[in-house]
Image (cartoon, rainbow, N blue to C red):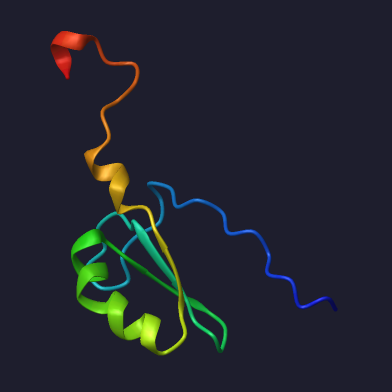
Length: 76
C-alpha cells in the first residue's frame, strides 16, 4: 500500500445532494472514509466545518455560471 489517494472522478448530473436531492456540485471526502455530496447551497452551509474536521473538498459549483460552448451567441 502506497498511501496515495485515488483520483477523484468529476461529479455528474446523477450525483445528488445528500441534504435535499438537488444536483451535487460539492463532494466532501471524510478523513475516516466515505463522502458527502452537496448542492451549491448546502455546500456553502457545511463546507467550512467539514474542512476544519479534515475533509477534502471538491467544489465544482463554478460550473453553475459557465456559458455553454455549443450555444449560438444570440442564445447566451
